[in-house]
Length: 629
Image (cartoon, rainbow, N blue to C red; front, side, top):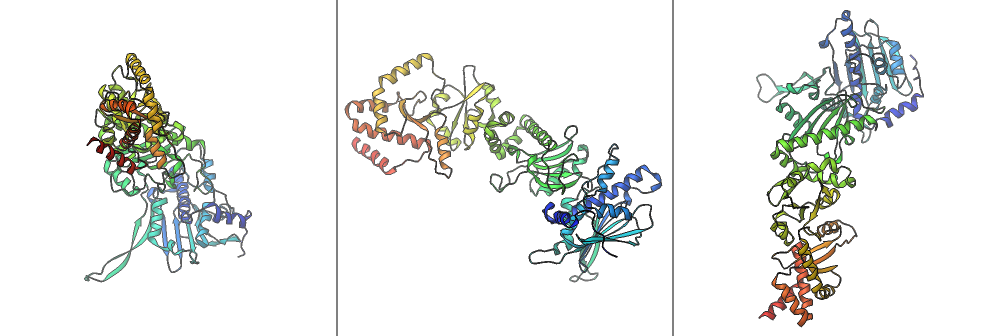
């Protein structure tokens, strides 16, 4: 029989289907199984509404048969089948979808979930097949028909026989060419894994004979092969079950199997939402950070399903960066997919789901913070850094969402605390939320700059991550209380009388500090009396928005920038060294220069800043020691 030409610009369009619309050839199986499921849906719906059909759910299913010798895969369904006219309409016209037509006819009726809507999925089989044969017998007909095509040149339809209603699709798998390996699609375990990956939640059983081995009867060494029919799919998604049907073990097993984690999740979020954004979500907060989480290799995203069929393995648009640690999936029938169902179109519905998930995740984290603090502390040690990055990114666009979730180590509580908890303990006279930055808690504990704040009995938040101070500057304040570094100019701790006394002292020693500043050759913006030191002789602070800790962090980034904070050398007027400085200013200005250098270098070392000339510093100290002998 002569080939019938496709009813469109077939060669060009079919070539587009195979080489452009689909980017991953393994999805052909997903498309064919989805079409088979749709065909069963139509007949099952008819059986529900017409008692004369005489079929029940157990009569329906999909089977896969692999014949390695003939290089064929046969996919059979017990669905409604197709007449000759339907074969011509549905398969002879590319992009003609019988599923979409059925859905449109029944869109006012409930429980009609049809997966295929575009009529092109069938042709994805040409990515792996040199010839497609479809044998179909429609419900209510005794006559079957065979449709066959080798590609864009056209197709043929002939009468044939088929014992049962439904459709068989036979794919002649291509031969291997160069590096193109098509044998993988003749491997039963490969096919089994593809069913599990993409079509695990198709609502009808997908069966396949799996070759297995067993010991021969009466033998301890010889094995024989046999086939065993397996159902490859789970059929009912766990996220569509009621929560009261599921146990923690059910959730944990699903999570560990699905996301390859050896630990159970720290928290499970199972939600079903209807309205402007209709979807089911099953989300998990891991107990530990993945090994590559804080690296460029980590890929965020949730698995995206449409009516139980996997569309995308990592849909990054469903998760904001600050919640990128969340694993899980979303299943929605309302998403606008593109023609191949591989790529999601960015529409209002997607944004609504993303926003809804963000609020849900925040709510769950807040509940964990309030009701299960030990577990939240565990979570924050793993993912708190990501939340702080979330505050800093986007110029603070998400700071209101995230600031209640942030915690820092407390000087008084010796544990992680929230801003709200800090404010709840603040004395009435305290004006600011004080913080101190450093490489570690132990290092911060010894900073001279913390002395006065601690002496006043005020709590200090210790910040040790690179992003911390940048995030606090973005926040600026919490509940009306401004953040204040213990190294900032005015700590707001002096009375008016103390301020006037300090101003008088500064004026009295103006010439001394001017000389010391000149001696340091532009290394500091200013030398002045310290308003914060109690027992230490010296410390280094900064003027302006750029702190010393920020300077260290920015200069550690591999680039050509050499940023410098406006450094201020502060001297403790109540320390014996101050008397020595005054004496040297009167009697030995050359030695005062040496003292100035030593004090400045000492302040750098306290801050953990590398000194330019360790040898010179060592020699200066040795010379002073020799003078004392």
